[in-house]
Length: 326
Ligand SMILES: [Zn+2]
Image 1 (cartoon, rainbow, N blue to C red):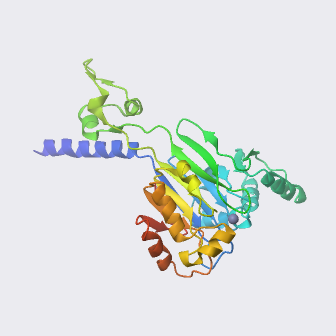
Image 2 (image 1 turned 45 degrees about the vertical axis):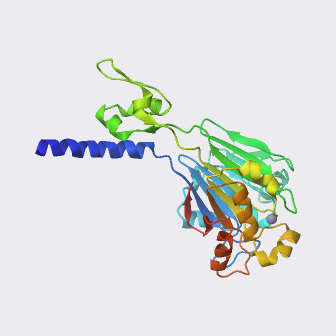
């Protein structure tokens, strides 16, 4: 009996190892949820997307580097930064972060995706301070009003699309590319399949055991989950034209600067209300909605989220330091 229990314990541990091996974490951390001006509780816009083995920074409002430190983000792992537009609350923290990377001795190149004017702004700041960065900055210009692919590799595709705002502004989508098959962990443990072969099996390969018997992939795996998609929309007026770009997102971040009684104000400033953000989420049939970019006039956000949920129940508030699974 003792022997049997040992076997079970061994298998359990083995299954746990396989299980942890197959997890690829996709999650979003909010670094700033305020609109134009920061408050004592809320920073301007910035979010960091963790796609398992990589971090992407999206917008970089003032104070973003302090938020990265406060929430213990390993920010040297960020190699790509996406700036939605050149209103100060979305990029004024960038120069500070770039100087810090230099002072920390960064050598790796850093890619920045933004409206073309950002390159001039950063170049002037570097020139005026007599700084020659130790690493290269690689700017990728986003032309006004264009939807295009910005980055692609085996695991992820990142695209931008135009939003409706007072200056050229883009939203971004991050799409997981290869959704790998799910291992049936009991089968994997029973057949004692070596860990080195799991990657091939997750891609659809069969397994040949030591007696030469072929175990087809259909017996070892189940169909993969739908690919994960994160869509980022800030800042924008109500604009159903964006729906095709963000359709079926696992998580949609959409700004909701105002409550709906301030709709006229939102229209004038080309921002959105709670109800408008929720309507876009509903039209795009996303799994979950995250709202942010809150006006400083709202100290307390209970009514803001309650109003959003009247149209789209699965909605959350963007809160500094919180992470959201994708
Ligand atoms: Zn703006």
